[in-house]
Amino acid sequence: MRIGISCYPTHGGSGVVATELGKHLAERGHEVAFISYALPLRLGELPPRVSFHEVEIARYPLLQQFPYTLALASKMAEVARMKRLQVLHVHYAIPFGAAALLAKQITANLGLKVVTTLHGTDITLVGNNASFKPVTALTIENSDAVTAVSKFLTDETVRQFEIARPIDTVYNFIDPQRYKSEIPPCIPRKHAREQTTLMHISNFRSVKRISDVLLIFAQVAAQLDVRLIMVGDGPDAPVAEEMATKLGLRDRVTFLGVVDQVSPILQAADLFLLPSETESFGLAALEAMASGVPVVASDVGGIPEVVEHGVCGYLAPVGDVDRMAEYAIDILSDCERRKAFAIASRRRAVGTFDYQKIVPQYEAIYKRVLEEDRAEHSRP
Ligand code: GMT
Image 1: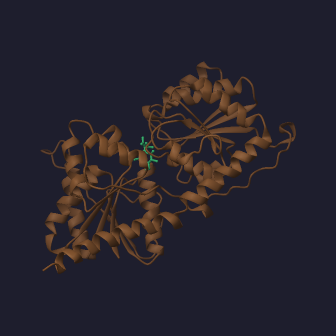
Image 2: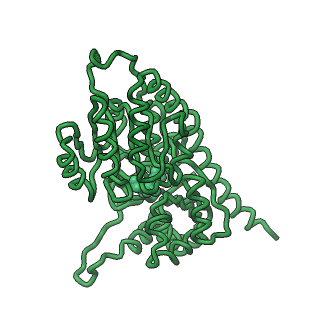
Image 3: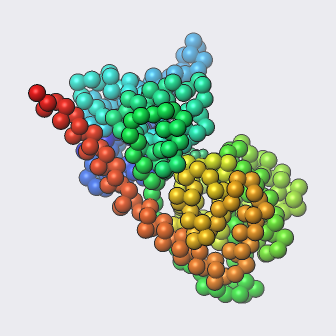
């Protein structure tokens, strides 16, 4: 098939999933054209059968706010014609889904199909804002197929947008080969080379509740010899650093900033913390689990579909830092228990979220929408 993919080209989960999906589709023989304002970060050197098409952001004094969605739609139409795209798979209803529907109209004779994947922020945080809601609803109703990354997000979309059309739940995925999961033997810590490490990876936005990460860590650090590695950057990074200093823990917290590949860093982790306010899936938690790292997280959104409570880690109500700290101490204070959680985490990540299981689900959706078209045309 000839597939266009449009996404945010950043480190965010939606961009990572879209990029990895495109690479796997190309490995499986499809032609893939990425359309974005920058080369997606995880794409690296363009693999065979993959092309990249940049949406140029022109500057003109009259256009104080550059109309990116319109430039994106024009580029999508241009690439669809040039590459004879059959499917345009967009990651986020807005602006990508809305732009894709415009591109479909512009290229009406091509019979381009639009598949929209909802990642969460477009529904739970931004999409239901009054400024966007009608456009988000229109995009969901008019895409040829809509997928959501968890059952939670599927249900939430139906509830918030009163959507009647079917939505396919297709989970996010990992490549098990990419994540090393050597579960370390239980050497008494005083002989161990490395300090026990808690880790958090995110875009440091308020939805991630960065201060909870530090409050949990403070309670764990009062009982165990631990350090915290914070990976990523965003608006709450300065707050986090200030808080670490106030808590007297600054020398035990490392702020690594943004990294391109998290898998090598996750090898240093013994426990992953994700105390978010909401999370439609929690790709960072899945990446930790694939590395054999148990997770303590909020019992919210799609997280329980990823992290099995009491098996791969523990879940607690949003904001319950005391409970999360207790859970963290429970896992980290007993090496055999930590090992059992680590093994179960890796097993669940590989058993349920291997790309080899998930990518064919997207292929089946592409085939379905293309066949629906053929069926329509052959009707007398
Ligand atoms: O919140 C983020 O970390 C960024 C955001 C994005 O769009 O990249 O993540 C959303 O999509 C990810 C991939 O599907 C999910 O794993 C995240 O849970 C989701 N974030 C939220 O729902 C807040």
